[in-house]
Image (cartoon, rainbow, N blue to C red):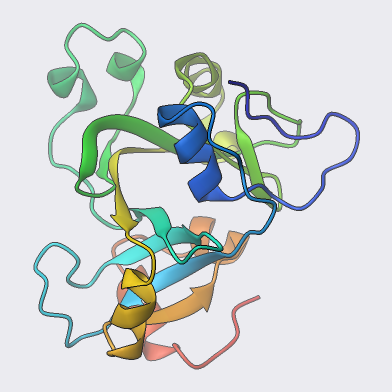
Amino acid sequence: MTCGAPRLEKQRPPLLLALLLSLFFPGLPASADENIILLVASPQLDSTLFERSVILVATHDNGSAMGVILNRPLPVAPARLYPDDTVMGKVAALSFGGPVNPATVIFLFHSDEDQENAVFLFDDIYFSSDRQVLAEQLKRPTKESRLEVYTGYAGWAPGQLQAEIRQGGWTTVKATRKLLFKVDRASIWQELSNKASQEWI
């Protein structure tokens, strides 16, 4: 199944959840609705897995959600984790995207050109797990591609994330290019926690 950005005119970005579902569960219908946000873990969140985490996430209209943790770099070279994978051997760094399907490789990147086998999110930012697309992005300077590679992802059953937000486990912030590419991953949780009530542009 092919998930791609429109060739002539970019429309509303497909749902990140729909992308992942279409990749791993072909044949499921994609939702036209989208809600791409950042989840900022509350300082009181008692889960060590998500402690001080910031997650790029999309919610489905049925209340389920899926995304990747932005600030969990892995201290192991991708070439060691994927010794027989020539594409992953060229990846400079890898982050832990979440506990679901940890063998799954997902990546975020920027491109001024429309990309096939990738989902257009916003502001020329794309998301994919296609190895050929990854190989093409690895040929570009990182300053241009802004390539970030993750293993695994985070997921919530219908209504689960909404309940966690109501209980004070998370603060939601609109996802923007500035937050994804201009704020250092080591400090993004602290910055968003300090400015949770402000609008980022």
